Length: 484
Image (cartoon, rainbow, N blue to C red; front, side):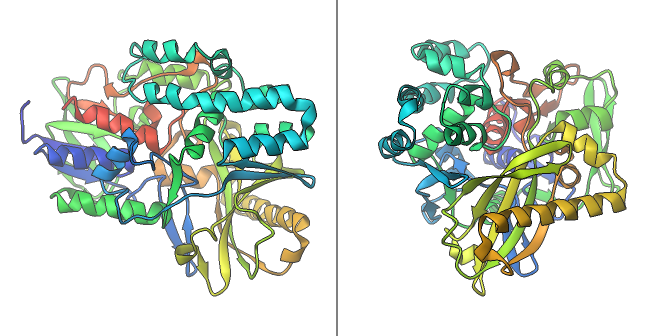
């Protein structure tokens, strides 16, 4: 391998930081360009009015030390022996009109609790937990998959459980219909954020139950700060507040990278870590395309992107009535183009060092959004958007107080954001938090690698694989480094 290449990386999220660190460790020279005033991309936390909010991590896949992901996180100092890992008792507590369903870490205890609530669903409850238990072996094989071809071993294991295969082609809403109990149906439909299928719910709940999807203390902000410091300590060049606005080609190679602050770089290799659709549309000639990304976008109604509308509040005093992450049913609220009948409440009192101040606890109020919701918000002018978002935030708080009347007068808004703000932050299509959803086998794709027709431009990041998220960004960037 030719050493000492001059590599320019576009975007300082997880993928950009990880690829930068790994390339520095291999002896290359690395410049990382980020348009925002801090690193992290969508994996970020902020200080707002004297309080800290975590705008990303509900959990982090790979917190178990024996796991491959942990080794990668450890290499970039996202996780280390000094970082406290917080293990919540429940993935979520679902409160459906007073019926509480805990989705707990102890699978057998949780199964028994579900049976006591819905004995009429005994057969399907037992099947549900059989699949969750089986997912550990299946996903240990999946982590080794590097291409679509190498998925053959994975499917050999998966096919031993027909329920796992069926879950790959089934939405959570469709799966939930087999349950008679309305609280269970609501829980299974809504307990997982995003639009990915039943398979992904089984996967994440299995990881959670094994202690492999927990929360690093301090959340996204402090994790990203550790990663940034690791990059800088290895001699990486970090440029903030400077957006790439042009790529000059010569002889089928990237010759120059130009920025809004009039910097010009002449790299041997370029790695783009942000949404490929943005790069292809805004930085390259239209003749360059990534077919797998185009196909995914053409299927967007079947495989929607996952965005959100998130309201952060502080609640003064006792919040023990909210049992950790809690999903409640609410009277329908219009959010974007969608009528939403649930609210995910995430109190951060499990990490009081960072999220509790002056007897006030930071709490997130969250609902999913998709490309149709983005188009709705994008149709509004600046003033209309401001009024609409403020109305939504107040509706969330009204729904919270209706559920917990004792919170009246104790809730104050810190901030809120939706698809438009997410698009501005990270140039993601439709203001997405995650890439195109995994809803069936045809929606599974790998798109990281070279851009066809360009010899020295690589793509990686969460958008280059279905599902997306921080683990995808980490794994895809790790794979790209091996090619350079």
